[in-house]
Length: 255
Ligand code: ATP
Ligand code: MG
Image (cartoon, rainbow, N blue to C red; front, side, top):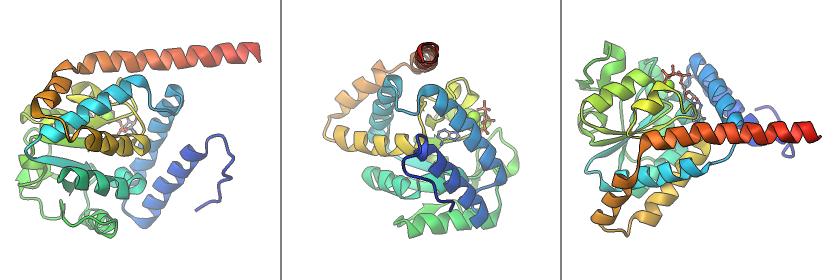
């Protein structure tokens, strides 16, 4: 990896970029993953590269939804594997949820590499290498899923997922939690709960919330979910971007 000076003002962002590039070099992230990362960086920049208030509220609702789930499943693609492999395993452990490799540009080699990486990161069980079901409404390679995993899950976490797949999973009656920095994306709009936050911050925050909320009763968790409004969250996220930009603009005018 390139040596990035620790004092660089955008250190975290540059490290993330290096990690995705390393994922491409190792063959588990697709080259398109670099473009997705670039898009994410842009939105993170507009948000001020921090977890906003609305993202914190969404994270709490997502944790409640996952704790209420009978069969939660966590989807992992090449960018997720490059950025937060250990953090995804920690979240799966905290929930007793299954991890399933699920790729937009599927190749058996990449699926195996990601599954191996998750196992090396401490996962005991990883699905996705032997899909045996199809999500309806998607073309063949993208529809592939595993029984007992995403296919049968009642709540699915889909970080950095595309809009069609998000919609298809929701159409199966699943509750879908997206992690997507773009509050205007189809993914964010179709999900039950959208975490408009960088996956680097969102996954550890989500695990912390799962641990914090786990002593709550089902009815208390249900209350958190009922009070949550995803449209309101997405409107707030856009407002947070606007406020951040206005503050930046004022600073530039002064300086
Ligand atoms: P749409 O959902 O509108 O169809 P898309 O799915 O075609 O858009 P992509 O560029 O393929 O868009 O998807 C990547 C999405 O993932 C973008 O919305 C981007 O903001 C988001 N993203 C990329 N990197 C990260 C990251 N590190 N953390 C969170 N979200 C990210
Ligand atoms: Mg999308």
